[in-house]
Image (cartoon, rainbow, N blue to C red; front, side, top):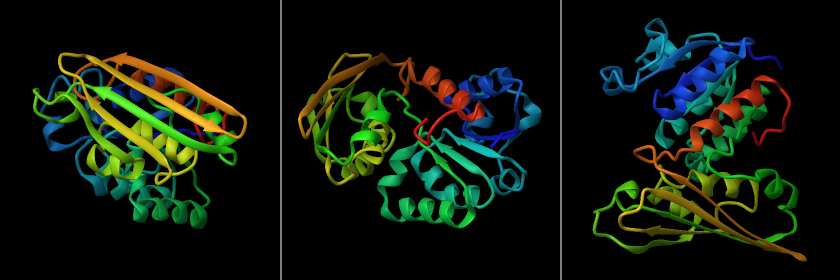
Length: 258
């Protein structure tokens, strides 16, 4: 499918990176950028965006005819809008921790089935999702350890050490803005309940690190990725990754794991 009209939900670092990528693409154009009332008042958040494309009303945005919507806001937003978007357009959701909610995952799957639309899973801060897709039938164990500052995890600055250990599904419930990597790996691989998550608070760090341990029938992987925080929960690599995912979708050159 060729994508001509793109809707963007969210005007943070990822949303603005997607906006710039679409503007550079010369094959598609942005139809709207949906922002919250708080963001609409922030010059920093709206830097570089065309004011004529900004919307703060969800119903008004959903009424716009588009081929693809890119969500870069929050898991609650993705869960709420996914069925509406997928009724008539494809959807790329960066807040994929939303799909740890069984009802949200079912709604996405059913909407895609009924309407013939697609949900694109961006790799975000991680690498190698294709390996999880290809190997899911023979992968036996996956453990993801994420280390961030306590503040980045929404905790008191004095908190240190392991703050969560359990399933990726429960991690997504407790830290929906911090473990989209866990969600993406779980969706691509062996699922939310079999994927093990560990979250560690490290005082004084501005680094976000994800270590992934995988074992299967005759193989094992051990790799990690790290990125410095750009403020909030977004690392330095993620906006570039987001732009790359959208670039591949616009080129219609890849599998659903983008």
